[in-house]
Length: 487
Image 1 (tube, rainbow, N blue to C red):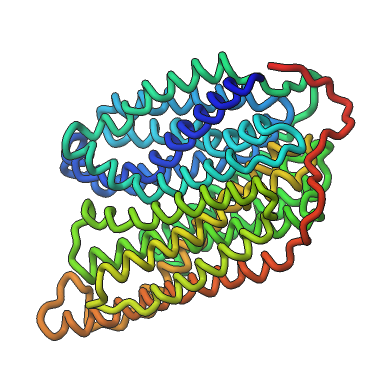
Image 2 (cartoon, rainbow, N blue to C red):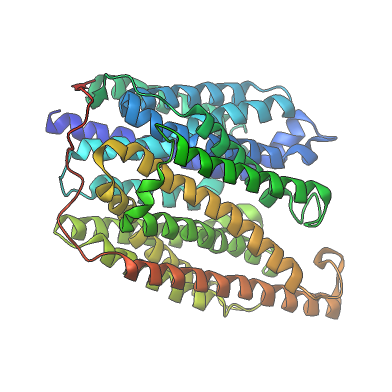
């Protein structure tokens, strides 16, 4: 590829990541107009499935996407994922009922599962074997973080000033441009020798992630944690995990080779990414809860308070990428980012019912600086440590562990908040002195959540210190039995 083609390829990848991340968050701001339009009587009960269907489908296909990249080549898998995502977006925009919209969101989620993970594989191959260029991974991570912070706000704007259907239709022109440019410009390695794909292992991974996500989504909400439904799902998740591990040991071509966990950078990198996913729930979701419950700020306005976090992620992420290009090791960024985020969470744990909102913005800026230092460089660390023929599996695995960490973090923090709140009753039904007492108790519970976030990021710091000291890049071509051609 020429340098111009590579630059266009990077731009295509960044637009793709924007599409993926925005659609994870953007629907939350449009739930009211969706229900009002499609099912004003009973639609509110089905709204959680708009998020769950997308997340479940996306997580279920992640391991399979990684293997497809390593077997078929990243370009074809990338274009297939974008096409599936666009089909799901068109179906979402045309939906005439909540049920149709939920089904279309599942189709969209299948495509979105590849948008983020496969795009990072494409970025790594645009960089080339052994090249030290952190721009792609760094900017990919920053764009994803910024999209998480800005998604609800953009969704609210589209829902208020256009129609909720444009939340999905806006993907079509951007996605078609990605398909055309990607098809014309990307020239990536393509493997021509047939290799087996462990579909049974992929099915077991999907069963494990789906049941685990349902446990975290329903536990303590639709059903009590000790209910037969949640206990059965938890047991099914454990059984699927056990069968999946057995399959990875016995399969000729495992979907997630356990040998990768012998590499320290991969082992600790996966763990840090999962923990970081859990911490980000505390930083984003529970700050929004604090603003709406404790400070009485409407959801559309509360989303604006995440902008300092997005600014911190972007600015520090760009700076980190430039330093990485000059030879700074990813281990340094992992340790520094974890430390900054841990301090930021400690500051968030001091929030009270009357804390200055400008002080909160400063704390969120610091949170963004911590995550911005971590996100892209951690992906870079994993990709450089992975054997070249397992680049796809390693890249999608880091996304898979982040998804699981996010789900477990949401469940843990939600349960913690419920158990620690000891007010005189539900906040919505309280008034006067009773409400003041209840509000203080609820804010105290949220402070404990942020304190747990600090503990999680401290654990990330410890794991970062376990990473090996810098050494020459291992991501070099290895002799394999495959013939590689340009696609």
